Each structure stands twice: as structure tokens, then as C-alpha cells.
Image 1: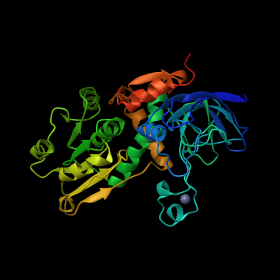
Image 2 (image 1 turned 180 degrees about the horizontal axis):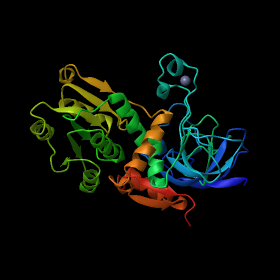
Image 3 (image 1 turned 180 degrees about the vertical axis):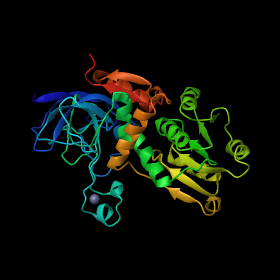
Length: 365
Ligand SMILES: [Zn+2]
Ligand SMILES: [Zn+2]
């Protein structure tokens, strides 16, 4: 195979093109994966609309949430828990930090390594070409940690674990134990917030509350561990939302607030947190200013802002879904599927918030 099809952003805000992109020859330790499913994420839409981030330049293959089967492997390889890999295994794979900088070594915080390798923003006209997931195949660098996907996890849900869900696992790792008397409030009813609800409930929260919209997303969330949801479209005044939370938390505010919406809801989230509570700040979308009343930051509170995940968080997300698949309907968070040729419909639907999570099946006829 010399080439394969991929959905390429050639100009900001313009329709994506389906192009034929070279398939690179593999060096020892590298893999080529046949993409089974690629879910889209808000970040893909930001990259399409611009402005460009960091050193990114066009053209780029969109998508950074892949799940695929191993098509080709140069040499022997093992997965993250030491099991041998073979052609045909269904897998997801981690990002790669440099391993040599201050953050990788002294701080041991590889997620903020400035030289971290990630996907969905790499040039498709330069080797190794295939580093975006909306394509028939993807190149997997030798440093990636590989996680096998058990049969009980769909390819679409596994793909979503490659961004949204592993970030949630990272957040919970940093948050520490949730005690059985604690109430968790989640801001945002997209895949991040909804997956966080399932994890919070599973980790022992007494009660999981959610503030979000629209109704159809909240209905999914109520099946995913949320005990009570407040629809933003019905309750438009922040004072009333705060009263709703205080009513359910003995007038104190939530023990844990998880911001899984966008940065502009941080100020409100801080008003919903009790003194001494923990604020998990995960939704990094949005732009502009979100002025915070400095005195509104609860005394003794902790603010945790995880970015992305370490290789173990990919494993944790996949294991969580595999072992809890009979308790939570994970696939309900994937709202619509598209063929590769329909990439522009999928991107538009995501941009207009018509779908919670779009999934591309690049080999669908
Ligand atoms: Zn993402
Ligand atoms: Zn580094």
C-alpha cells in the first residue's frame, strides 16, 4: 500500500478535502493501524476554525481520537501491560512526551512537556504523513504505549477514550479519593461531563449532580450515573442554579465541582463549591475573559487543572468501560456516525452542537 485516503484541512474554515496521502515505510518498533473508528472532539473544530495553535501549519489530517486494528508492525512489540501484540489486535495508543525536559524529568508532569507528540495537527505532506485519525490508516510512532481494546468496548467508545475519557481519568487521579458522604457537581453535559459522572458515581460519591443542556444530553447523563440534573435552558439565572445546589448540599456547596464545559463557567463553578472543596477544572474550550471575583474562591479549596493524560490513563479509561459496560451505556454518548466522505457534515454538526460526539468510520462503504 503506497497511499490511503484521509480528510485534510487545507485552509482554515474551508471544506475539508479527501486526499490520497502517502503511507510511510515502517522502522523498527513502528506500526501502521487500520482505523476502525475516529471520534471528533471540540478541539478538532477549533483547529478547523482557527486560529492555528503553536507551531501548527497546514495541511493537516483532522482527528486525534482513533481506535484501530494493527495492520503492520515492524519487529515485535508488547502492549502497556507486557502482552505481545499481533496483526489484527484492536488497540488505542498514547501520546509521547520527550522524556528529557524539566517537566518530564524533574517535575514528572509529562502532560505539559513542551515537546509532546500528539495527533490531529501534524502536516500531512511531510513524513510520517498519517498522524490524524480521520483517515483509513494511521502511523503509530515506536514510543507510543499501546492498549488493547477488549471485545466489550466498541471501537467508537475506545476512540473517545483516546482524548475525552483519558483526560477524565487523569483528573480523577489528581483529585484523589471521593468519600462516601461527598456530593459531586458537574458543569457540562457533553462526553467529558457525562463520563466524569459515571466515574464519580463509581468512585463512591453519595450524589452526582449535573448542570447542563440540552434535554437529550441530560437524559443520557441520567443513565450514566447522574442522580439529578438541572437544565440550563430552564434555569437561566445563576442565582437560581446556586440555590439548587445549596439545597442539595446542606447549604454548603458541593464537595467536588468538575468543570467539564468551557472556561467561561469557571466563575460560576467556584460559587457552587463548598469551603475546603476541590475544583477539577477540565473543560479547556472557549475563549475570552472569565472574570473571577477573587473573594469568591472558597477558602481552603484546591483547584486542579489536568491536561490530556499519561499512558496509564488510556488504560484506565479502556478498563473502566470494559469492566462497567453492563452498568453504564457508554455508546449512548456517541450520537451520530459518518463515512469519511461525509467529514464536512460531521464537522458542521459538531460545530453547531447538533451531535454530542460524531464518529467517523473511514472504511464504511
Ligand atoms: Zn480531543
Ligand atoms: Zn519533555
